Image (cartoon, rainbow, N blue to C red; front, side):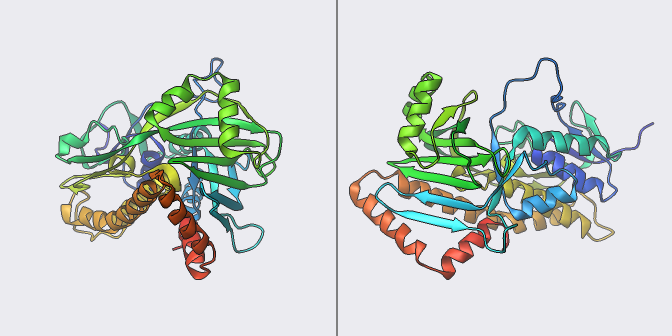
Length: 372
C-alpha cells in the first residue's frame, strides 16, 4: 500500500510544478495533478507556444534553486527598457550593478516548462496523478479558468477590460541588444521583448488592443500583420517579420475573495490576475509559491498542513502585494486607455517628470527587478 499524500497540487503549470518542488524539499509527499509536458523531440511537435514571461531576479533565484532555470538561449537578459507615450513622453530604464545586471529575463515558456518537468521527474517525493487525491492540504494552481475554486467556496471577482492581448514571435533584421521596447499608443499597449539569447534578433510581441481591433488583426495575412506592427512601433526595433502563429486572450483584473480555508489554498492565476502591461503576472505567482512553502517550512511542529490559521499567514503575506500590483496595472491601463488629447498631454507630462525623478525612478526600477 502506497504512503498517503501530504499535499495535492491541482495544476501542473509553472507555479504548480515550482510549488511541488519546493514542498518536496520539505520531505512532504506531493501529488501533482498535471498533464505531461510535450517532449521537445517528438516526431510530430505540438502547436507552437508563443508565450514568453518576463521574470525578475527573485523569480530567477527561485527557479535556479530548483535547478529549473532554462539555458541562455531560452532566458534572455533585458539590459534596458525603452517606453514611449503617444505624445512625446519617453522613459528609459537601465539595470544598475554592472555588466551582469538585468532588469528582467524574457523566458521562453516551453523551455521553462521542460526544465520544470525534468526536475519533477527526478524528485521521488512527487508523483504525477491523473485526478485529485486525498491529502492534508490541497493547493489550486489551475490558472484563471480554475474549475476547483467553487469546490472550496471561493468567489471570483472579475473586472473585464474591453481588450485582448495578442502574442506572437517576430524576427528583426537587427539584433535586439537586450533592449525591451514598449509603446502606449491611443489606448493600446505594444511590447517587443528580446528573445533568443544575448545576440538574438527575435522578439516576443505582446499587443493589448480593443476586442474589435484584435479580431481585425487576427484576420490579417502574415505580411499584413507584420506591416501593422511596424506601423505601430516604427523602425527603432528594425524591420520586423512575423515568424510564428498568433495567439490571443481576453484581459481582466481578477481576484478570489478567499485564498485559503481549512485544508486548501489558491496560488498563481487561480488566486489573481493582473493586466500584462507590467509583465508581473508569473512573478506574482512564483512569489505565491515561495511564500506558501516558507509558511509550511516555518510552521509549529504540532500544527497540521491544512490548519487554516497557518494558511492565513500565507494569504496575509501575499494579498497586499498582489493588490498593490493590481492597482498599479489597473491605474496605468485606465490612464492610457483615455484617447482625449488632454489626457495624452497630462500622462506624457507625467512620464517626462518621472523620467527626471531620480530616486523615485530608481526605486521603481529596483522593485520591478524584484530587489525590494
